[in-house]
Image: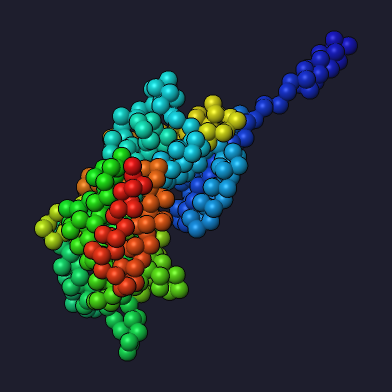
Length: 408
């Protein structure tokens, strides 16, 4: 009888013990299929170590990610933790949670991040996102195409004139139709050329008081890009790429012999049907080397109802363990580049070139009004230059007064 009552009591206690309550966090991110495994691995590892928190992933390709996220945040909803760029714009709307107090309380090792990388994730001195990576660009090139055209491979001494000369020789045509471009560019990476020419977009890229892209060095850099498209016809027009494919597709299919892009493409190009390699970016005409600080980071939704749990996940995601997983995958140059574990884990092909270029990075324009200024003034002006309708000097001088008015 005693054994019977003990069994009943044990069973009753088991039934009375509540199941472990779980908090569900929504984590949103974008990426090509080849870029997804590290995100998934981090979520699995975190949930294994934190069984009371479930991570529900919300993934979308780049093209659709922002439309959905913007609508969610505007409705004071959306993911608890998000992969994000253009941090000042979202922070200025009150949509992101300031992270400084969390970092100070938990002694999160923010000092192990390059300070220049952190600047682009701040607004008015407050940090709203912890960077995952630096969007360091390098020059990818098709070795088979170079060999067939008897063109020497790019090297650290290349300048713009070398890039142009190689692109001319590598471009192939069938009648008037281009069958392979010597070079393909990404239409939002033009600030790198400006910096390589010793120019500026604004007097300060994060707290600007003056538009400077219309100065001689800035206009010259923009005109150099436009001439590759319209004069030399060795790079596709940006509007044409909507029909023929983006820079990644054109290079990986052999329709472009060179492309300037980031470490994420290492996985994308892995199975390309030709031999390829990576070189440093060419210097400007005077030999100035420059790249751009960019990259994405991890932020917390200011309207999250689970901020304590969201921070627990965010600090794992953006901390040494999470950064090491991303670094090992090789698809991003780690922002936590002063952490020994992360630097050791960074296992990308050509890692030395990526790290070298990362040290040359200038800050990409990133402030609360930049998206508005770029969408309404700079972007449309540059379109007229890319389309051959205007010179860079004329188009940029025309918008300068209006840009400066918006900076006041």
